[in-house]
Length: 139
Ligand SMILES: [Zn+2]
Image (cartoon, rainbow, N blue to C red):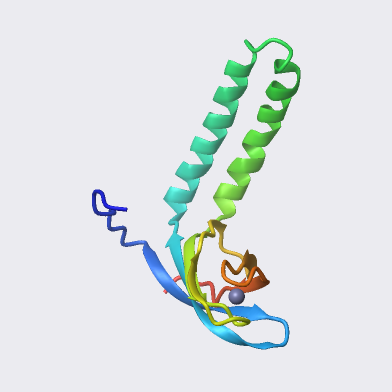
């Protein structure tokens, strides 16, 4: 796909991880992560809270659905905001070779960086584990 060049973000960097599958040696993997500074985490938390509560206000005008949506969004706001506040790193993608079949591929993973993320090999369909590096402290 061609288009405008991606924005260069100095906080996006690659980390060395591993792909694991039962009974096979681990294969090296590269995780693309985005680090969040404390002000950015606070900003993301406030935006998440504002979005959920703003949608809750809009949901008041939806007949019948407002019985479910309004309380759900009011509760979801602080929950999502707290998770954003605690999220120091976000995974933007990963790549590596499948430890079972050896196919090189990119994995569409996103969300908070966790120790182990389950992914599925596109080539052989096996469920493999994407392991993040043990040290998660920013450099
Ligand atoms: Zn595979």
